[in-house]
Length: 114
Image (cartoon, rainbow, N blue to C red):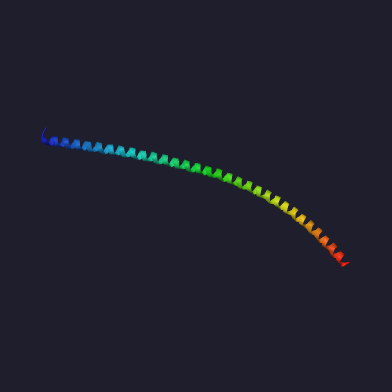
């Protein structure tokens, strides 16, 4: 073989190595992209699950809060009715006392007037 053939063979070997290197880079890039897609999918799934879980917890808390508010309203209505009844009783007692006091004062006035 002469030098020209050897140079051509060496050139072809370099081209072959360059092609193999480029092919290896393409395979590595594909694997990296595939890994990136899997990571994005996994992270997206985890975030979606967390959001759905938080929404569920919020719905439960909202329902619990509505129940608590309804219970407090019922309790307050009962307390207000009880206080109202107590006040009505107190007002009736005061009216009775006032009527008695007025009647007593009227008798005393009648006695002094005669």
